[in-house]
Image (cartoon, rainbow, N blue to C red; front, side):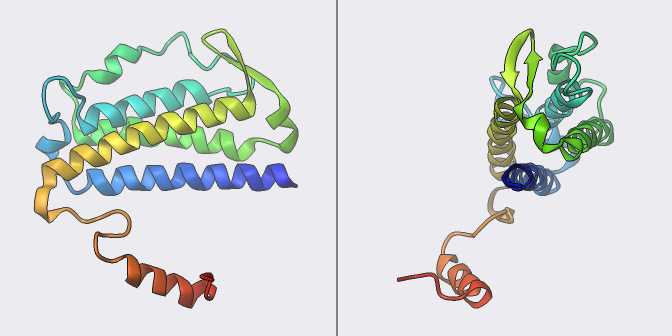
Length: 180
């Protein structure tokens, strides 16, 4: 039963990162969606396209085939010429659908299995944590880029500066006093 709880918490984390990326991306214009901070960085569109492609590759037939699919063209995930926000979002949504379908289909015994990514054997839990870390890494990049592009009109995705006391009070009202 603990494994089901663990997997449920992992899925919640994926949902949270997906939501942060989407809430950050909606704050930028279509032009800024494809605008990197400078020539050495990726744009929000590139990163979302890349995560969509990564998810499709890693999570399709997760338990039965290598996580790096032979038809994946990783380099093309970082090219957005000819793309629109809608075309990138289709790749993003498709990748996430594949990820969540695979994650929700896992059974507790599956978590003790071994899979491969690029031929490297990995325990299923390790592969999931590795992918979650990858998503967290790019989520931070997407949020940073969006926040820089939006500037003073940025709508915070978590507790805004100066609002910690208000947030903590709302949590006390919801969950009881947890301070000692």
